Length: 621
Image (tube, rainbow, N blue to C red; front, side, top):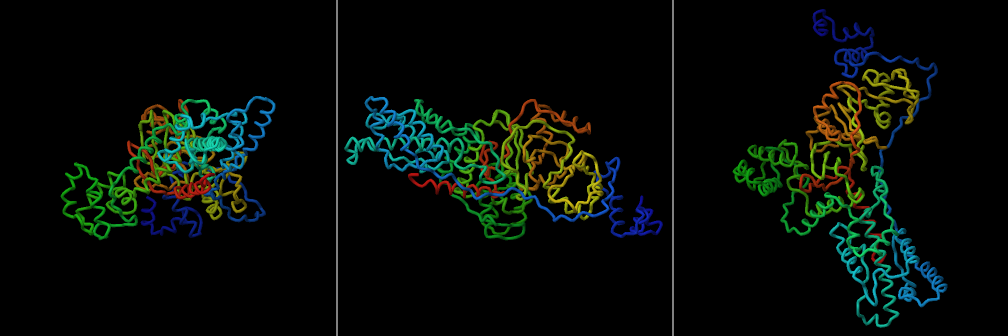
């Protein structure tokens, strides 16, 4: 109606803006006209303008533009093995032997054989050895002049470390032969046996720590990793090994006892045993319909190789007709789109990095490497993940709800950008908030909004945000001299509920220091993309109502009714549900292990850390 009036009266658009706004400033008039005609939805919802504060009479000095940095990756430094202090054991037991006056036991007779023995172990392991053998001066693994059954069982576990994705060389022990010309004197035999005793105890404890905790301390990798320290006392482990009749079963029980770990182990075994003939495609291949590429015949060959009966029935003739062709003919577009759809890709018919990766897969060695890294990452988690849980995998851009290890719900997710990565941690879901407020994180306020506010102080008012001071009083953003503040801005900013709210209809909360949660979003178009790393760290859900219903134990209809009330409300979960915010480039889902790109570069970071651990654990240390 306004534009029609302008045309009929002969007024220009700009003149109309001046008339409506009462200002002759061209830029201001254009901006005000835009707000009048197309002002954002949040602005239209505002009931009353907050009171404006009078600006200070004397301008405060301008503060340099600040920047809140994201967490960084660290230069990983593994724990260096230390020399075991066998002299402390000898001194303590020698004093005890003198006080007792009894004939020395076989262990005490052999104790002198530790003189000059340079055994290296992690600091806690070395201390546990000294503590245990001071208190329990006897053999665990030796009987008579040889090894006992317990030693044989543990050695088999250590020698099978690779089946769990560990390195057998980290647990190598020199085993004295039953009969050897080198050990033909009693003293030499005793020395070999007591050194074997200490070495096996040290390596069994290293294995226990690696199986239960992982070889790498995740929190030393980057600021994005945040895991509580898992309890495992080396001294207590050695006590159990000394007492139990089944030390092998005990050691293996220290590995994660969940279906994800078991699935990855099966995948590792299958990959190592396979003799597959790979079709290797250049990962940088890019082909559009109508163009040609020397790698294109391989793509067709792979599609044909992996096609099932239904796919062949529909597309087999076209594939045969174009076999070996380097030209991407139009008739092949439906074939490529169908293949993309089978791999849960955006079926756009364009062959790029994601399509090549999904169709051709990665090399066998690359997949093995990713499984090994996934096994290591699972060791950072609790052994038992919980009967009800939510698994978020940033690498696959998915969120899954499970009950009794069965996937009840799985959906696409949008996670943090590489510059604002979603952290790697686990917590518990406590409640769902409907029609939520969005409290603008300090990093976004400082890094993104503050530069704009310095140019345009009233931006937050027009966009419908609420600004409060340190006492909780509402103020107008236009009244604040934003130039005087750096990273420590004494104001809080939040966006009220509504259609434009960044969190959409609801958010699912598992309170944590990273301010990460799952939520709805008005930006639905991002879910159609194959790579979905676009957020500031939180996890946007494709179907948030379904996830909220699952964690609250109710129906989607009930969630809709709660949202429809239009008011901000909270509902607690009947019980806290574990949520795992992870990063796995090899991930068991829907009955098979899938492989994903290393969007955050964390695989390379972890590989370097593991290489340093391997290097510092040189043979014999």
